[in-house]
Length: 485
Image (cartoon, rainbow, N blue to C red):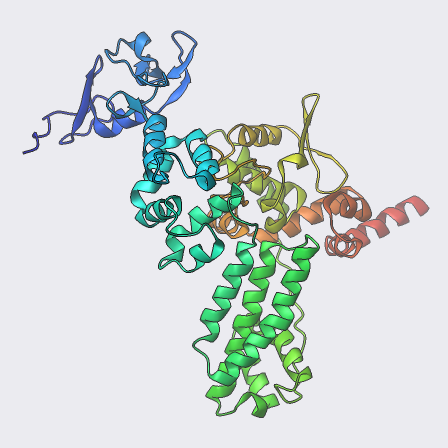
């Protein structure tokens, strides 16, 4: 029978009716506050040493000695000062013990093929996260046991044929990151799986056409870009949108009582007129299908955007001001991403793929390079970037063997996906395309358009168009007239 909860509030959070873990000089501490306190490390304000900071000294976290906490949090095996997971043992030592048993090849030794993974997991800063992952993911735990004891081979096929491949996808990515598996592009594999799922529900003829279109147009282009190191996450998104619209068009034609070979111009016109502008993305499919005899000759007009979204410069400056507020609740990753969007007009696809090598700190001046040119990051924005560099996310685990990304993602070896940044910035009220266009318009009014293009990796045509849209042509005319008078 469990003990009843202590009647009274927690000395830290004032909650009542909760389980308590310890009694310290400040009072009784509930289990949640105890965990938070025994996982916080930093410089103690009392002794100026970097230690575990479970206590409070004048309201600030401080070490056990300076606050009189009658407990020793040093691991009895490794001496690390941390929360105990088992009696006298920290999370790192417990993780090492658990993995030693889990990866045993049957002789009492860790299976040689999995030794790099053992080293990576036990060497990560946050060992607790690895223990939690293994505890809640029984599929990954069992697969590791089967791999260690030789019941399954350490190959891509083992992961692909797993009954729950999604449950072991992170483990597979870890094995790739730490070179336990041969390199493979998981994005291409996921795209192919997505394609098969989409075509499986189509009529046989439509499935054949869509599969051929995806293979000879999109997958062929994807493999070419991969070979030339030009493959980006956005390539897969564009391919999926194109294929989805192609499937939608064929479904529309079927709904009107026609097969693809019987498609008429009226079918195409009704498709374009009866839905959102994204239906125009089916144009590439229609042209390909007509060329290869899957559709009769029909006209599919090229869509031209009627308007260019752009926010006002006042809105842009307000977004920038929000980034610099000390009380801002925007995470550091989003602050830096928004900064490169609002200051330099970079797309989120480019921002998400930025490398640490693009940021340079020379003689106290912070610069960023999108091409060979280095652009200074002016105060106070340089403080935001430095803070992000000092606390890069997702680098305290084994997910990144040798991180080179400015925005490391949760998936091993990969950068943060642009869609993640996109959705979070939109939630904070930033019109992404409008903000990028406003930034470029401001820049081309301050500098010649070719210089902006060279510095920010845009074509001359793009920056020249932004200069015209910003009204620079009329401004240039006025300045020219003024000098002639």
